[in-house]
Image 1 (cartoon, rainbow, N blue to C red):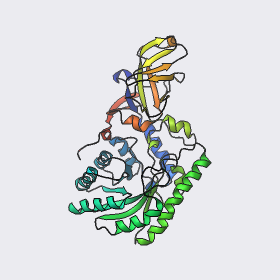
Image 2 (cartoon, rainbow, N blue to C red):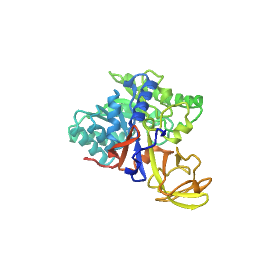
Image 3 (cartoon, helix red, strand yellow):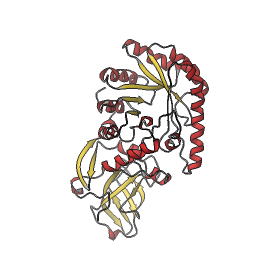
Image 4 (cartoon, rainbow, N blue to C red):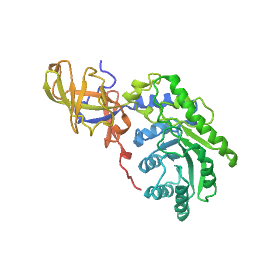
Length: 367
């Protein structure tokens, strides 16, 4: 009996390749909905999948709000018909005009973005005024990631600045807690509570300035189950939709399924204990140390060296393997791995049935 990942017509897929399993994707979406409780409080980040068809699966499951990091991802969502799109990346330079053009080109989608600096808010407002566009914005808060976001103590002044601008509308607060990686559930919860407390304090200071309720967005994949227990915030996990070895290994309390793999083949048998695969730096995320991939059908294979197009594995006995043999790998980090492929092969009931374009791996689609 074949394992769930095995592909009967694997000879139709050249390697290395990205393969996705829609039924497992759907199961992951349903689990995220179950964890969050209300689908209206789920705002998935699409940086992981970058695939229009995957976004449509989420929409079919009732998800209507999304988060993204690039203009191309925002346009991909608009092309898929997403009603609510948050660009969680402060636009600067040409990105501002590109976002404005998206707003004008896709009126059925509601776009918003984050800001964390009063000068940039002023600049965005001027460009929106020139194009007669009203732009919804979230204040981006630094809740511990120390990457982007205004310090919480300075957020009320930024809010007042935004409220004085005629073409920006302050609708929410955004905090990304991607620094939270604790495998221990209790420690992870404590760190998530600290980040949320910073956001909540700002909320309490800014909400009285507005006649309408502010939205709050927080919670990457490791922390979102903690935030799901709160009343008034949206959760924005991304990796959950495909899952990967890094998260699967670190967070056994989160039973998502591997739904995207890389396949590769043995291209050389080096010696009695080493073989070489066609899976180099250009085919799997390489920002982490080895191992960068775990092979479901060859767990004994240990990655020992990698270059642009090659991966050397140490095995107990290379005579047990053959040239051309297929390995099915779970990447340690799926998000940047997906971006290395122009398309994903769709696997249904053990057969490759279709391909999905990884459309948002490109920096530009139309705008």
